[in-house]
Image (cartoon, rainbow, N blue to C red):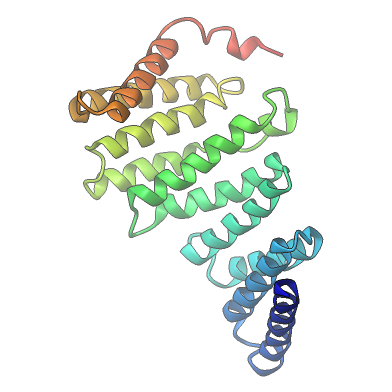
Length: 237
């Protein structure tokens, strides 16, 4: 049946990995790609331990060859994160998503859909983590990458439209997750919320329900950040 074909296919990928190691041992990027394909085969079958082993090999090989700013490495980091997310290991996924965020932030060919995609995934993953999880609180800040992303998008003239406004709203949400650890994070969240609101007011279509929905969310977010409701956030245990 279909699973028989799948297992035969996986066997072929395993053979391809051995052949690649023997015949082209020097080509570590190609080896990483074969590890990645094999990991995907194991993940489909929910064989998470073997998937993790091959994703880890691929991740380390990409890191040592193309380096942490390459889109190839970013893609690999995303795959590692997806494996954790599928197993419900959300806080373990976040450092890999941060690596992918760094890649998108520093890309020469930075673009809004890809930037939105990774920020969105980070927001969703953090929102699903327990707010009282001390390990999540200890994770490094997203600030350096978010700052670079804004600078990069502005330099390419991509920061004066509705999509960028929505991205600002989502980046503001990411800073909110750091509010307990840092007063600066609250200020950064507020600045982005203000920018999001300004752009949405300029670029929203009053006849479009989706536009109005984003505008409403941005207004709520900015009001909350401008009030004293956050004062208690940093004192919460």
